[in-house]
Image (tube, rainbow, N blue to C red; front, side, top):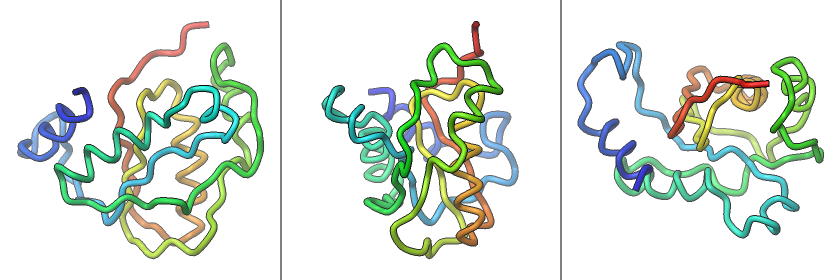
Length: 143
């Protein structure tokens, strides 16, 4: 339901405080990759599930099976902003070249932005020039 509300907001929004002037419809949606061990434990990938809804409502393809976690990292929960950034260094990689100019990273919750930043750096290396982050919630780091 929350993903549907996000999709409707993006689809129906005019340029407002919630959608900046520089809003560009992305070529692809990129769900934040999840570690295989976490996926097995949880049983679903929330970023991918959100992306499925956004893709359907906004007619934007999902960049599937390209980005992956190349390292196993500690859970971000309980880490400071600096620790989160260090924890994600060199975490993400791509199986094949990204053929896009604009990508929206999709996640459920953004706290410090460390995950989006780490993934954005890898997208920049692939030649993606416009990266946005779409999430359901933004929460402050409380440690």
